[in-house]
View (cartoon, rainbow, N blue to C red):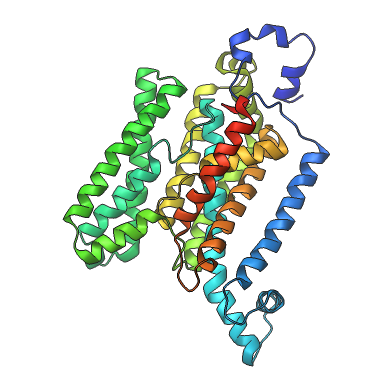
Length: 371
């Protein structure tokens, strides 16, 4: 019997005090065949969206040509003429950025849903905890200190961004643990840390040369421009390893999110270990993504809420569906950004904020019980 089933078993509900039952996650867990069907359909739609995104804004490449080129490349078939040109354009330029957008969106959304469950706060995300802002400062510092000249190149920028993001998360969770901070107060700590690193990034911009300043601004916008297969492989690999680990503890996430710490402990969940382990995985996901893409907000906040509305709050289904929702959101934002004012390309971080802000406001107004 799963933890959720134990929670729903007759005679167990009265054992939980009323304040514990009044969780901010008021949506009841849903699952079963309907959830699996929705998950399968969402994956199929995402695949169709990938083919469509590969064709959008690609000069002279239709939806059919893009699909044929990807299929031929996957099978190792040789193409010539216009077909070869279409395949090269799609495979070398379009698909790496699409793959990075999907992996980044999935990683941020999964990180968001895990943090929301562990802290029992629907407003928590990698962005609101200051992780994205910290990564931005790390990248800015590397650029201003001219990490490129030491032979580190992009690796130096990515490494600094990742290290500072991990350090920020350690600081935030360390303060929260030391002071036994409530989930609501933790968001305020995250806001303070975000402002701190934003000020430090502004200082780096003030000290930067014109060329360095352009790089810092481009990085803080959040973008998948210039994506390579290697970038997508690293981010996708971290997501592929993290999701099964989190799914393994899905029932424990359900217990903490819906029943609270005391009830979860009574069901045998080591809440402290769960928070440390789950928090480390979520932070690693977020830090890896922002190290390669720059600051992208709202995906880690909006993606889990969209998934929760569609598939319910059972983390056995919510975690993978959140990955699909975040991937679709970032893929749509990138496709809009590079096609709306073509040939100009709007960074994906700007587009996703423009899409995410009204979408999140609509979620708040339509389902006030979420907050």
